[in-house]
Image 1 (cartoon, rainbow, N blue to C red):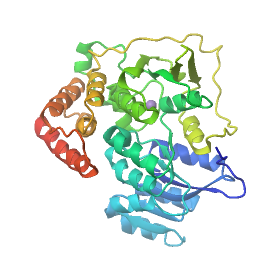
Image 2 (cartoon, rainbow, N blue to C red; image 1 turned 120 degrees about the horizontal axis):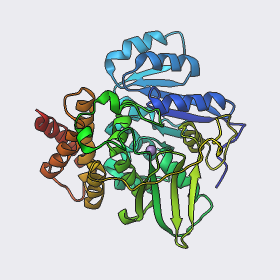
Image 3 (tube, rainbow, N blue to C red; image 1 turned 30 degrees about the horizontal axis):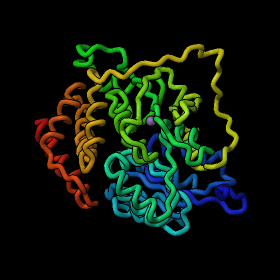
Image 4 (cartoon, protein in one colour; image 1 turned 90 degrees about the horizontal axis):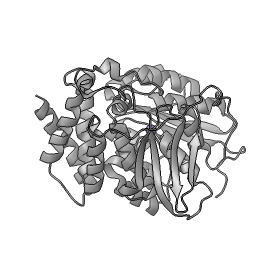
Length: 391
Ligand code: MN3
């Protein structure tokens, strides 16, 4: 593969979702390596103040804000700079396909990542994929498009980056199994009785990773790991029975690959998303960083546990959705987005989230071979159905 980094021509980067946790960390990585990378476009959904600040600092060609109410504010705050300003969800998808862009980092939250990712793939862009919901909702469609349009997808999710790194140099050596590690989240040791009463504030305190609110709740409920199983299936072309989840509370082993000869390769490091973000930006090369290094004398023990499917039902629901295929993972995702937002408002309990999702999965219309329009329709209908069941 041709080296991606070329000091004579800076790589043009678009960050979709630049004000979120991944987006802001990606900008730190890019600021550190500004002789290699240049920001071409930044987009955000709602956080207009931070988007203005980022645009003034990185001076992209263009910015887009999803929420059109913020257009005037964004436009006037940047009026002294030659930055094109757009607003509306559709404009974010259009920004993703702009000709000069070399790489699109998809770091939006949830289903909203689907359309812009499709556009970027159709424009043949290299994709650094942080928005896992894109693959959960429409993995088959995305992978077919990526193959047809020659758009490489490089995972940013730490587990998938780990697997991707383990596979580097392995050619077509057969994978026997992928072993996804899970921290277990803040509720790993809580009993089912205790889980009845945990609050969103408790769920937002993740022991190892500092992330956005939605993914932190998904981590506490293990839905995040459920999504990651589905993400792994599509990224690495394995079958569901080739994906195993192991709870590893220290979050130092980010995931592993077991090959046909029984050999297991693992990727290790401190839990810091800047590493997988940077690897996705510089792949297949590695750049020097000043991130803190893992120290074996400080962490003397790695432990492993089986995930508990009784307390964390979501993992089982995700396996079911993956086996069932069609629009079932899309149903799973839409129901989850609604229950998470209701849990964050303390409108429903922690365990209720899985109960409601399971109920929605039983009631929603199943489509075995969905088109893009079917996904759009499924997402919209399932959101309504889930809200009705919560009332
Ligand atoms: Mn992850």
